[in-house]
Length: 121
Image (cartoon, rainbow, N blue to C red; front, side, top):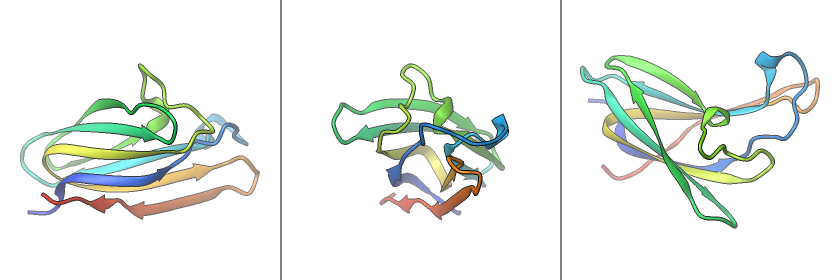
């Protein structure tokens, strides 16, 4: 079996501005791989420096599939732009998580990607 049920992304930030067409909007993404034969039910909780946490935002990753979820798309409440945050991802079955940021504040875009920190599980 591959993956863990708990992951942490200690660094998050959605830039306030973007440069270029809509598909180049600055964003934060968590990519989740579910290599099991059953759908994974995932909760994403978001933490801030100076306010209470929000979430968990609920996501389902179908069996033997991947899901790319942008933090920009979380609603009720929305994740604010221009504010540092961190997140903890908890799933009911093992998944693999990767963190990606597209920063398009300038015409010369920057892309950062890293595997999230796997928690004990």
